[in-house]
Length: 383
Length: 140
Picture: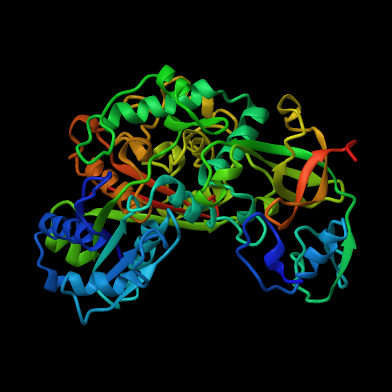
């Protein structure tokens, strides 16, 4: 059976001090229902996705299903750090394939800015091994910085090339009304921003944000009945790598991404060069460069050159994160995966406005969870 | 002695390898060695990472290691702000396993680069906790 995306909805991402997590979730959910022209009674199950410990609510699916008025429909929580709602889509797809339900909402959310940046780093530093690594105060930027340094040492990737990723993503973010940062920046801006964890500087890093994003999935026949332009999920990939850096073999690649991408390409019967537009996990500029290589967009070690030559702009070999990416949109951890898929869905429906890639038929959404222990890929095709 | 003594901030108190902190207090770095397959692990594991056997013994490590990668953390988590900036190093022991630890401030920053030889040594932290630190191989 095919599974299609029939509804998309999200909130703006950013510091949304006027709303709680459930209120953001309701906004995204209602937007998705409106997009699909459905009523909430049509939704058979709600998959709630988020990272843990950014707010105080335990078992968030409980309050979300209640607040959205979906009881007694089944609901539960999916957690895979920054890959949570990407994994939620995989779970929803499986439930539809298993014929448990024909119409499922995958709802990703995160409310991060009630904590200040240092407190968020307290939470995030426990995304590493709490027994042997967290006692040394690692941060999410620090973990990625150590990979970035290894990539620079091995392949000669430069801070300028990393900065070019941020410049590209901010260029497109400036045209995305849902993005947190809507201002173009220059390579100099990035290079002169304060150091967070060397070699990563402020504009090499995505920002903590609040936000929610919702996808409505439907089985093939129903999807065609509901809409003229369902976007089909044609490939799925999910893989893991050791959480501990000490257990990893190398630091110039996120191996889980390589595995997840291979699975998705194989299932979707496409090659990397067939992908017309991609959303990849640019939590840090260095990560986007490594993703180019891990997802097969360019050869290993050539990621820096790939951005330098403009190949990931609209008009390049493969436009990447042309909605602003996490670097410009902000990164509400649990909402990010669904938001990636929303951007690809818009591209494949030819609704991406000023950031539209011409004739986009095949899209790839990729998320890394935490410090690279999970990677999820979703391959999508226009109807 | 429980594991709560390990690290500037400890997040785990109970483990089958808590004796590790006792060895640290004695000035020694110990790993685990699988009795079944001989695999040497650091950090120590109560189950072998290669064969999952629960039969293991302590093995002392030389502490000799080579730096693989590092970062200087300026924006620290709230619980570590009084320590910032600090340099996190990821190093590989001559025996094979790897370790993540702070690099001693006594090591000149210009010397901190991939490939440099360092020594992992036990250290008493000012807050009364025990830890280990990557330092120059010739320092006492």
